[in-house]
Length: 130
Length: 130
Image (cartoon, each protein chain N blue to C red):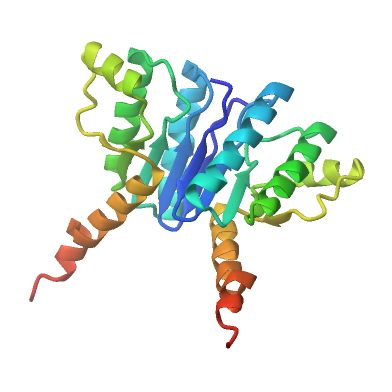
């Protein structure tokens, strides 16, 4: 049971991190997520870290890597449910998660992604005359 | 990290089971879920068991108990993401999860709950003349 499931909801993917991720399970998650983005033509990825109580540079880098992979595949990543202590630790570690957007909870994350897909480049490009 | 997070999405709650649940974590999950249903006035609970590969009578009873608690609090429970092997084992164990509805995946579960809240008793009661 050390594979993190990737849940699909419309054009969003939801990942809830609950286990202490090891190198191997992080690699599997990145692969599963990349596959799921392509297969489902997902526009956004929401990573819920409500259950993550202790964070280290490994998890910080994992979040940044997932966001980079998603961006390459034209999907936006939002990290939700960060505990205050986790935010403090990440900043203390010098990992400010540049390029990763955050939202308070799943609901706000979904709202943020829906908003940006309405005003995002894909929609505005369709509005270009000619 | 052995507390299963309860995610809120509009009037639905989503629980993704990824860890091998022990007695204590099941009790915590039931409490957290009951609290969350009341606090968020949730109408539905979706339990994702995509990551559950092996099932025993303990997990089967847990799902039935959660469904019963939710029903008392006027919320409907849908179990999603069941693997074929898990379905076979549950039936072989004689646990047919009576009273628990299932859906193929999160998306279909959400659609099912939205449908039933449109046609459910709460809405039809409002339409009674007089």
